[in-house]
Image (cartoon, rainbow, N blue to C red; front, side, top):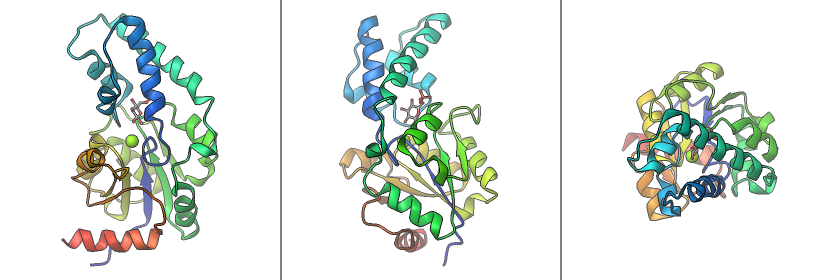
Length: 227
Ligand code: BG6
Ligand code: MG
């Protein structure tokens, strides 16, 4: 079976860049101010989910008034946006820029499907925003991952059907979203056991985008899709 792939859709955090540490520092600053316990391990559970769902997970069942929830999310975002000032193209994950450029040169449509409302800022600071034909971010749809809406929105903007697109994801919620939408999925594990565990429902798994060509990856995907 040869797959008819026309578009490549990328999650941002954990696939093109690694902002998980910056999200952690911002949540941690707010959590410390409030006296909420929050560790790096806790932060792993926030990968790929919306700002609101992140707060819910951080609160671990604590119930707070809505007004306070809004204040905490806004405060965390202010801290996060401050940290984004430190981002430069050096923050691109190894292999990502070459992979994107190669995909574009080969004629694939490129899209972003990120839960983040800061995706546009991050992509601009990374210097890769112009490579994308569509940018689906935290403002594009109401239902965030694991709902398929964001990837479907991006595919619609690219003018492709899900079966003609591949989603690259590092988070469980993102792989679920892509699968529910009917996309081919490539899990990016970061080369760790925990990472492989997070994306084990993907059609195939790669540690990262280092030293892989789009052609090779699509061939491997085709083989994996038959398995
Ligand atoms: C995702 C991150 O990309 O964006 C999550 O993986 C984050 O950790 C989510 O919570 C929302 O980001 P933001 O920038 O809108 O708060
Ligand atoms: Mg991610």
